[in-house]
Amino acid sequence: MADQPEKEKDRDGVARLAEEQAALRRVATLVAQGATPGELFAAVTAEVGQLLSVDRASMAHYESDGAVTFHGRWNEGRPDPLPTQRRWVLGGKNVPTLVAQTGRPARLDSYADASGPIGVAARERGLRASVGAPIVVDGRLWGVMMVNPKRVQLLPPDTEARLASFTELVATAIANAASRSRLARIAEEQAVLRRVATLVARGVPPEELFTAVNEEVGQLLSPDVAGMSRYESDGTLTGLAAWSRTGVTLPPVGSRWPIGGDNVPTLVAQTGRPVRFDRFADASGPLGVNARELGMRSAVGTPIIVERRLWGMMFVGSTLEQPLPLDTEARLAAFTELVATAIANAESRAELAASRARIVAAADETRRRIERDLHDGAQQRLVSLGLELRAAQAAMPPQLAELEGEVSRVADGLAGVQEELREIARGIHPAILAEGGLGPALKTLARRSRVPVELDVRSRGRLADPVEVAAYYVVSETLTNADKHAHASVVHVEAEAVDGVLRLDVSDDGVGGADSSRGSGLAGLKDRVEAVGGTLTLQSVVDEGTSVHVELPLEH
View 1: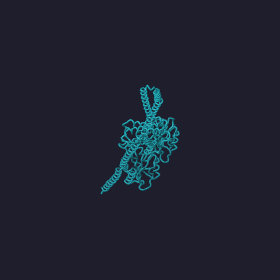
View 2: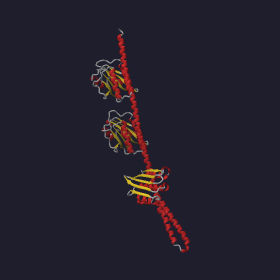
View 3: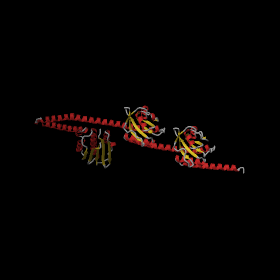
View 4: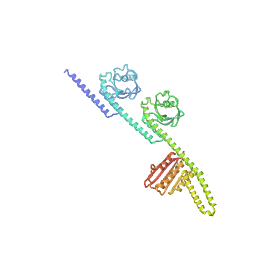
């Protein structure tokens, strides 16, 4: 019978082990199912509290700023003595601080001499003792799991080891959740960057791009404010885009601020590098004072570098006590690189457009000069020679009839050359366009066209010279094509100036099949139209005719 207590002890040990394994299996199942951290923390603390027959079980997370936050708590149905989600400062003699300092399990069998905010609060709330085991995730101390005994009992010596079995499962779950969170964040970030890259590739207007990028950054990084600004040559900063959460009002877009003092934009301007600012109590300069008045506590700015020069900056700011995440600079930089590419592309397009406009303007001026030279020089000389020849013909005596006939033929030939030269001059730069404007010039083209033209011009008054010249040559070239290539029976021409744009539509009922890439005429028209900031659209279906739609901005 002496062996009976030993047998009962063995049976109790086997039962306790079976109970512990069942609890661990339940927790492992939650981990495998990918339960949310909140669900897991609540379930684990409940399993631990019931398994170890303690008064309380809890779980806390160590923050990067030296604080600790309780995320899970089991109290056997009683009120929680240390509110969940509250941040506590580490320090003194208490289990969370001891675990944080050593990274190892810690035990306090009496809170009589506990100290620090956590120790004092625990003693005041009647806690007598506790044991804690570290939660280590990917080699880094993440948090602590703790239990408190019932009444004045001491916790068994194996409590630390039994807790460790659960902390290992919790660490696995946290690591898995972190991995899923990282993957989800990477996927979200890549999707946002793809959307921005698409806008850049489409060459959307800078203002539209700036607004879109700023909103994407605000939604992705979740700051309180986000903005984009450009550095001006006079030492000021111009706001280009602004995004904020409810309750934070940023200065309006377009406002200008002087650079200077201790603040993010000034530091970025001075260094040309990313800047992190967490000392807004000392912020100075107009920009720094404004940020402090907005309640900013942490901000990050990243430079926008275009063609190796500092062009502007993007920034995000937070009103929370915790500083912005450490990877904020790198995540912002991915956006500033795309913005810099868009700005460089826009500047290149603007420079190209300006260059093309200068070339077209120079060519038009040359054409006008040639037309004037022909009209005032060669044509007038031919007219004078023709008059002199007719005078000589009229003065010839009757006996020189044969010679008079020869002179007459020469005079007729000279008149023909004069008319051809007049047509050449008109083709180089029509005088009617310079004298009467687009409406009369298009009427002249329609009258001379060998294909009947139905003309509808709803543009009154003179337009800018580049616009009139571009529109004239569009109609001239399309009428020529309708005659030579389309074999059209009628051409419809409509011109209307409305909403700051000259809209020009030319369509025929010819054979269609026109392709601007196979000839220089339509390609040249497209270049001319785009050189003045316009657009040309061609539609030409075989056996269904050809239509050309042109829009030219009136402001030049």
